[in-house]
Image (cartoon, rainbow, N blue to C red):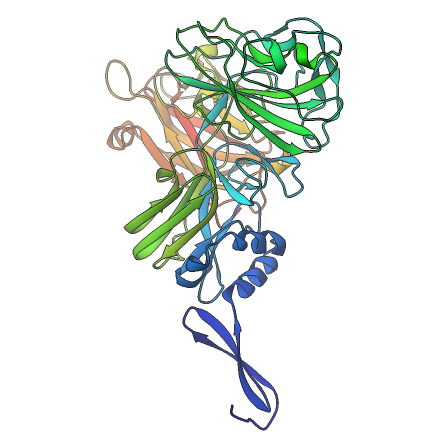
Length: 544
């Protein structure tokens, strides 16, 4: 051991994949400083949680803690970003993440919360109690009115009522279906779902449940109505057997049942029933969900229509040929010899939760630059999903309503069409210019968009349908005719043809996030209608 005379001095030197502090205090010593400590500090400095990072790191296998060049595990420093840890330096490298809809998750205290568009969900309650990055495929809840606010499509076998009820763990709910005491065969169920069953397909019904005595509910797979069985009458099927009964917290369970459709019909019942063995018990149910497949996914709230949760997407840019190992709650995946941009969603088979990803190779830390994410959901009406609103001052009829330009589909049967008297034949305007806008719906959903994609459908006869010739991109936070028009764009019919009816435009984002975003069509090409198949707005992932 050497000796150094003089003031204390600390310098960092790399040894393998680990930084160490070389500390001189009279005697030379070398003390290792694991990169996780540097990473934790970097995440905390960015506004993240030390507890989440350290808990996520515990799930990483020691082999990959030692061998991986980069590790991705639950850690995010703001509501939009997941970070990779450089396993030599502890530097935090942002990773591309997106999801074109809201989603729910369970926080560390196992209370259900909602995440906005493009927000990663660090979850503790779905699929397992491990901390994980929720990573799910697209799914839809075909049962409307998940909080029983509207009384849609519901019926029952008697001896039940809808009551006000406090679900402490589930703050988005304030009602319950109450199945009475001292009655047998009491049940609450939906008369039908808002979908047509496909013969041979599997479907999952789920709901949250609590008993009055806060004991585990008795639910079995025997035939209705014994033992609190689940009632899922798909066409020509007996009630299906129980699939899952998962304790969330405070005696609240989430239960699910799996069924297979044998005919194509919508006029069937699905719900939960209480049998003779549960005669003296009172049951409470909320949050019914009916979805495709054989996996109970995270809860999808509904109001007056079905709702879809978009797929989670994560991309990693690589600067060298690399191997990637992905560990999820249910599976593990090894990607060998990959390079360029790797879309993780293409390699995970089902809705799941990511515990960690190990990269043996080099991540391109510039890939995150100039990446764009869509900032609004696909609309299913002018006002759904709430709180978003699509609007125009000129729609030819309800078939070609405003929301059709925001539904994620571009085509002749899914487009916005303005009134035919919006323009004179020479292109001059009659009254006001037709405009189309989307209201982000709340302060929390405001965005700093900087990119717009416009798609116009092809005519049934020839060429592309009449489309904007000159349009202006505008935004406002009040919608009181105070739109700031950021850029005016001119597009000729030849340009539409050349680009297959799709154009992308870039503009400077506003200095603060905005709620109302519009295009105003100053001049049309073609005849006097304006046709827009799809309008999509994006924000830079580095400027949100």
